Image 1 (tube, rainbow, N blue to C red):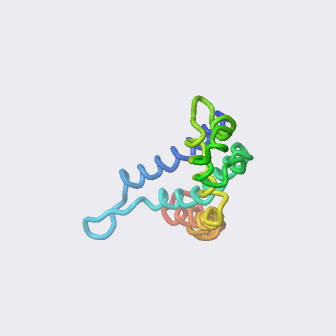
Image 2: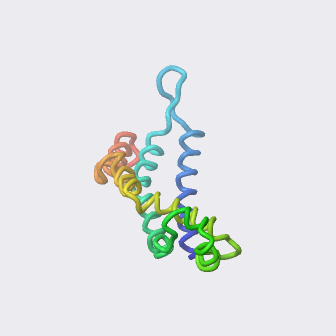
Image 3: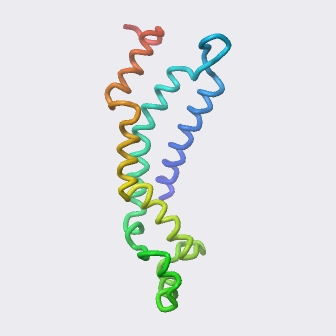
Amino acid sequence: MQTRVGEVIGWRNLFWSLTDSMVNNPEPWIGDTVIPKLEYGLTYRMFAMQGYPRIKEIIEQDVASGLIYLPSSAADFKNPDVRPYLDKYVRGSDGIQAVDRVKVMKALWDSIGSEFGGRHELYERNYAGNHENVKAELLFAAETRGDVAP
């Protein structure tokens, strides 16, 4: 589990470092304006379409049945007959209360498992363009700028 959390943190660090590079090392544009360096923006775009599905896969594999093993609604916590069972069997590790664990799991489910989550994954995979063109544009930009031999 620690290696998988480390991988997610690595993806986060990748996007933060690319964002920092785009902000702190721009290239001149029109007049006195600047824009993010082309290669940084194209690299961000390529990894974004790979990162979201990878993180989703990690959540699906490692959280697994935790996304299914949830109360049907918040009303279950208000039911005095059901609440003791939830507090006992749905709690998290390290003292995490059941209600807090359920909030996290429901947010994860909304992010990856719901109809919204499914549409969002498709959006992230395709927003920047098709998977081949995004990579080809990195090559074409490098060729145009003289960074690779033709």
